[in-house]
Image (cartoon, rainbow, N blue to C red; front, side):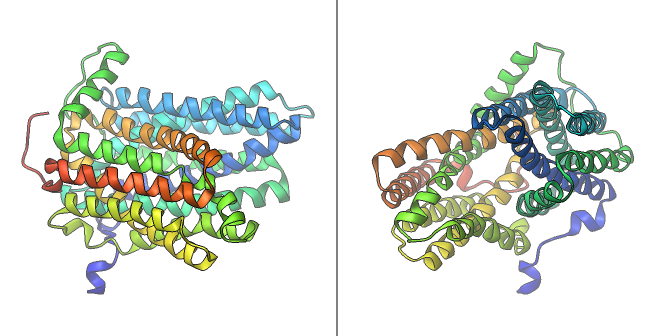
Length: 414
């Protein structure tokens, strides 16, 4: 039983190219986390303005979205290994320039804006190329295991890298934070150069990039499994706006302070980590699509119950469970998307998925914040969770193609 639950590390053990990409992705996640700390600290120190802090974050976020979409087109036209190398080189140069700017007696705010956008664009292109290349590095029976390993890296990195970045900034300053991120990023180039050529399965015609993105949207909309996964994923990302309500919920419903808020934010990540390290069963699931739908409905129902909690320990336990089932959904969704997407569309489909996560969370935050203006935080969470659970149940009842989807489908026309 324990062997069946234990995370499948087969992709790391059996595929050297995947090991190298995994290591490069881990360094990239830490670099992004350190950047997320250094940028707002530096901008606030320079200006004392939260408007500029938000402006730099917006510049980086919009560039990241553009990088995802542009990277999706490039990944379906060109060698993905070469694309990863160029994107990581560009990101490393951006970190170096941020460090040099930070060491100046009077750092340039304009340079910070421009370089934040530059790194966002490079990161978007690099992440998309990496996601599109992964199915070529592992066997079809190891896609879920690869997804679980990637999810674990992102979860652990998102927990540890901001803390590491904060320590470096406190001890040495933002310049050395950027320098450390640059060294790590440039160091991954040696790993990526050892990869074999990773050309798309079928060459993408040199059409207008907007037309190519439109073709990707049409493929997603017309494919009964991939389209259903994107629709369900959007619902999960929109529901991801609930953390906006946590400070008010902790104060008004749980009688807690900053420590309680910290625990509420950490609990889902801890649950997600546990789901990743016990995901060995997922690769051999007989009905992964059905399991994904059950996890979705269960997760949203847990959110609804969270709004009724009146003790911090109960709230933390519910969020731990929510993080667990959300990670199960994410791991299964990754495997199904990769296995049902033809190689010639992997770049654009992964780009749309990454853009969906980034944009969906922002939309969810706006929605949750607006709802919190009219309802008590606990009531707002109940409404958010209940509506999401009802919508997920409706999707589960209507998306017959997803309910019967398998991880190794028969070939079908795109």
